[in-house]
Image (cartoon, rainbow, N blue to C red; front, side):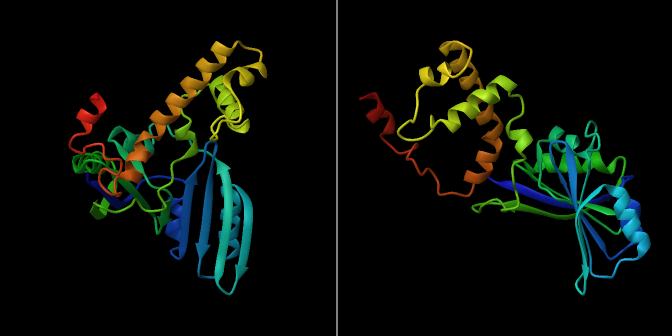
Length: 244
């Protein structure tokens, strides 16, 4: 199986375009969390008072240092609405976003990974229809691991789990249910709750199924560069041995 990594830059109206255009030595790295954005802002040049005021207006400053090496600031701001955003368009074309987004000199830099080169091409055509975009690199990834910076967003891993399913999963984990040997049983876990054992088990199994379904895409990415058939699944004679 081959994967495709594409890097591109584009321009459109966003909160950080103007500030990165006005300060060409500035680099803004943007991470999306479940309810906020975290920005790392760096520059090799000493900042002006005007730039510092602009940075203060972006959000809450979590860290700031100014020295001989330049400027380093980490801020947190409210999450911009993602409905209809470029991240949704990545998903529409089966492309996995690889954070962070990098803002530099008015451009936004993105990297995505896809299982199909045609998906990358369709995404590019979609984006160039309404914004300036330049493809920087497109590489087939074969027989090698995914870049270590490819981290699965936590909110996507737990997408679709209800509060009860999450609570059931957490209770099982904290009581050693997933250890070997098991540190507890379903009956013992259910006895700590106000629901019947069958109800607790239903919550737990649904949580496990949803978690594995969400993690499936990332599992395929991780295993794409491993040795072929490490479990001997396709070994000749396996079917006959199983039948016996």
